[in-house]
Length: 56
Image (cartoon, rainbow, N blue to C red; front, side, top):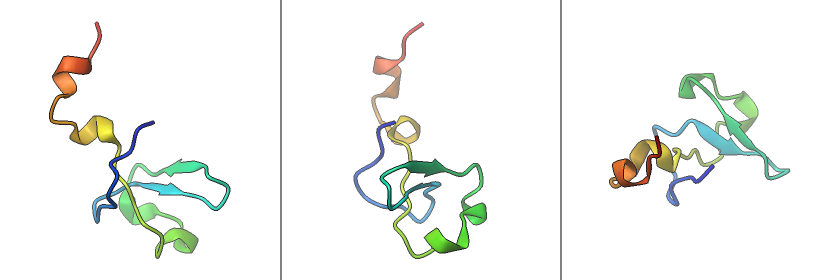
């Protein structure tokens, strides 16, 4: 999944020590061990050109 390059306070994706993307439905539910880690947003949610890339 492509992520925005910069962390976001609204982010719901955390990268674990093993390099695994942990996706949380609710950013408030992020596991305590990851609270101080950078949080990212899916680029699918923020891409200004998303409509150009959607397929039927």
